[in-house]
Image (cartoon, rainbow, N blue to C red; front, top):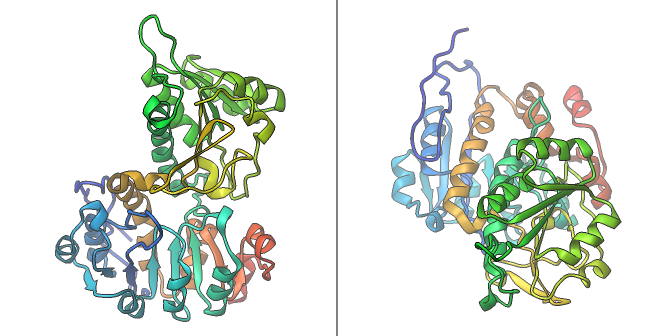
Length: 403
């Protein structure tokens, strides 16, 4: 079978191949994009340009009215791209067999789900609750989590995209809260001639750490990256041509760096696990007054023992003289950029939904979507979730083989 493709140059959707020939028998997809109702969540899962591509591939797209308002995407733009505009979440859920959200469903959204629907959204292991899982299981929802969607080379593409944004924003945020007016120590992150720069310690040599280090170095800060894996630190040293300092993440180095750091950033890579605090409260007590903690890992647990969830409306609190910023949805601060980035990453996976006749066939044939599934046929298919919620666990490969 031959395929043709052309290239999409619309803002926010780049270098996406358009399949021109599809299998004869495919699943009829009605894809719903609801407005996000979580506190301070301003993103939308798919931009109007993304909707246009989905519509061109035969996917019926329903967008809830004002879903893109915080990104300056109007209902008119969505309608012109080929979407139907639903006047209410009830209407949207009623018309859709696939729901695509940014954040996990809220309790008030759970009654809107119908039996057999598919949900694609973030999950946030650090805040997953038993009521959410129980309701979705009872309604036989097939659920996929952004954190689990994985390519054959082990890459987590959606996590990586959002981590790139979070890493860059972590440095912008740290620079702001170091300012005197925000109760910080009054240090300019990059310093000036004759005045030393701020000292930034990044815990975790993953994607968040990479982009945080890149931006901090770009501003002129003194950067140290610590991680438990020596090979990751070697890659950082090579990538940055030894313009930063690296250290193994043990209690000794962490306690020493805490005393001298103006900023500490928690950038641990979860790899589908709950994160446990790596920095104790006793160590945090030794940090300088007015120093700043940015815990990017808060949605998967926490990196610091003193971390607790905050929001964009009330982003910080002070404990032991240290400013803590622990917002779980950091990329929402740049909602338009984040929504374009999410669209770019999600589209190839959403287009896979049109290639087969049933959900079972789709998951059987697509390695990435199969890996991303955490609920299927009334079972939890991720062991960590089964352990957290005490619901029955089954391997998805076994469930698919049985069906």
